[in-house]
Length: 127
Image 1 (cartoon, rainbow, N blue to C red):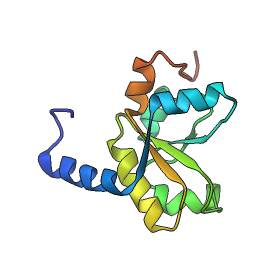
Image 2: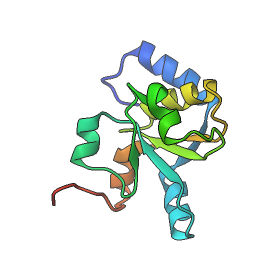
Image 3: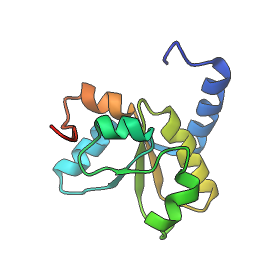
Image 4: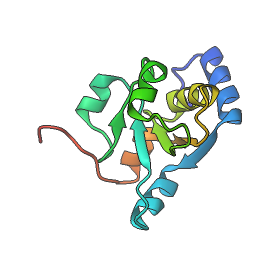
């Protein structure tokens, strides 16, 4: 785990991770190769998403996801694969969506960093 995260933050992330479904970057890659295109939801800050993101991803930052999720995805059974920078914020967001009644939420462990490390395509707006 990243050394710049406080222990209390890591503790709540670990508690969340025990309660949510997770997948790996490779799981998402394999699904895309097979033609299955899960809805990817980037929960990073708007500036992070604007700089680069996974092709086809939707953006709902962790700071507003609970407020805005129902407008974009009103069906609480919709499968949503959440990702952030490394998999921490997405686990926290996934737990909150589950509390709101979303039943098919998955947090992508490794996040955008893992996606790039796996040499997967990235959308860089304006390039």
